[in-house]
Length: 231
Image (cartoon, rainbow, N blue to C red):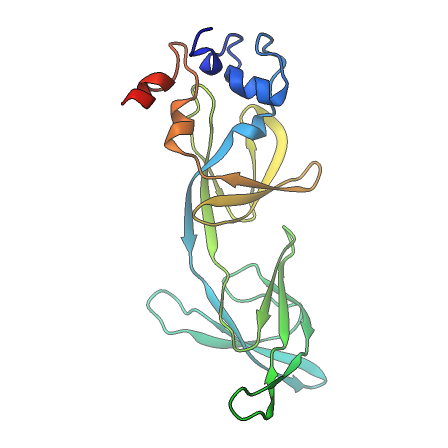
C-alpha cells in the first residue's frame, strides 16, 4: 500500500482520503464529500476588553434605576451611567433585559456570624443575536468586542481570510446560502451559530499541521507526512 494514500485526493474535491473515510463519503466521487463546515477553522481572534460593572440599584418614580460602570473614551477614566430596563449600555449593543434581587447569607469562617451579601443579578442581552450575559453586583465583567479571521482548509483558500465581527453573519464561499453568525471567541476557538438549524458550533484554531495537509495539485502544502516524521 502507498504510505501516502491517506493524504491523497483522487477526486480533487479538497478532502483527502482520510477525511473522506472518517466521514463515510466516497473519495472517488467529487459530489460525495464531508460537510464544508468541517474544514472551517479560526486563524486569529482580536479581542478588545470592555469591562462593565453593575454597581447599585435604586427605585426612582416607581422604576428601578441601575448604576453601571463603563469604560470612558480612549484615554478617559471609567464613568458610571444610570440605566433602566430596556435601555442599552453606552457604546455597546447590550440591552438591560431583566433584574433579579439576590441576597446570599453565609456564615463567617472567622466569627461564625451570619453575613449577608448582595449578589443581585442584572441580565443583559444582544437581542439581535440572542447573546446573553449576567452581571453580578460589584463584580466587574469583561464584555469584550471580538473580531475573528476564519479560513477554509481547502485548496486555494489558505490565503483568503473571512473576517467577521461579533454578532455579524457570514458564509463559506463554497456554500453562499448557508448563513453563519459569530457569537463569541477566545484565543483558542470561536463559537458560531448555524442559522438554518439554530445549532451552536465550536470552531477551533487552525494548526500548522492542518494547513500542511491541505491538498494541492502537486500533493500537500509542504513535505510529505513521512518526511515530517523523519525530520
